[in-house]
Image (cartoon, rainbow, N blue to C red; front, top):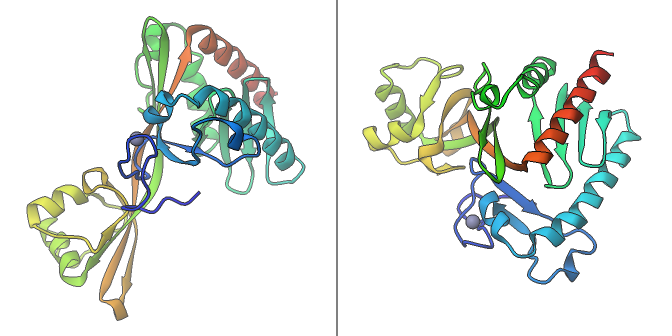
Length: 262
Ligand SMILES: [Zn+2]
């Protein structure tokens, strides 16, 4: 399902959705058309959590996610490190990326490489609630303990694009006091630059206030007199677990860790 910034709206609250939001995609799986009120689309995760069709959808989705993983396992593009009824840890060798699947919740978190996976496991399997309520050293994961449930917050990196006229782009360089220097590799707060230097983008893939991150690429499109910035930004994904679910997750991660380290 394609997210078009400034066009795609959340079916619950009717506000626009952006890649920097915590999102949940409701897909048009076989069987979902029989669920009353179930509208395929891209939802804010918190809005999806309030939807009445949630439980029914998640049950169809769980079945589908497991089938998809089983299918992909037949290829050399995916290996399953560990799996049980609730969770799976998969590895994609081409991109060297790990994914932790939460089948019952329809969620997943991406761990960019082996080092990030190991850091996550060390943190998630560290001793007490106090340890987990503290962010991990890379400040990517955190658990917030409530009486009923535990909220796992996980930071993921993603890329957004912003286009400026030549004048706008020069305005940003000027605001950064960079002259004609290359922006690649620099951390830039585009929202602040736009506000303070009075610059308007031609297009931007998320609200400007969320566009603070490291510039990955600058593309100049001479004919259109536009400059496109590719910015790596961070977004926080939330996963809600009951206390028993958290215990089962940690037991699963212990098994996954022994499977990986052999
Ligand atoms: Zn919403």
